[in-house]
Length: 180
Image (tube, rainbow, N blue to C red; front, side):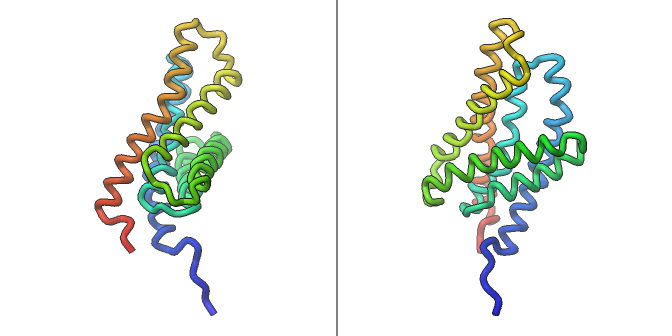
């Protein structure tokens, strides 16, 4: 006797399509990372913030449990094709960002889908990125203006990318991607 899948084929296909598209963005961000770190390290958080796209778009379109983490993993695999040496970083970032997005959604029992909920996860990711990268990359060696710019861009980056992801997700919903 067959049982209903927790994630039907339609949902898996939508997650895969969003994951591939956002994985391309993540791959480009990965290619740009060494350039940004060498020329404008204070802007790294803004670039890293682009990795919020898969989960936010998937959750806005599908409004279901597990779609953020699944879409993030697909995006990480696609991004890894751009730089296979960074596959671990892409997958680690996908798991972390996806878990934060799923966690915030789980706190509302996957019932609250207002923009505020997405911006909370974007803000949490921004603060986490700002603190971790600041210490790991020794950004304290930068001049004070660059440290401040880094902190502002690291928090604002994921929030700005969240706004873009919501716009994309809303447009996809209106286009009928989420229809049964």
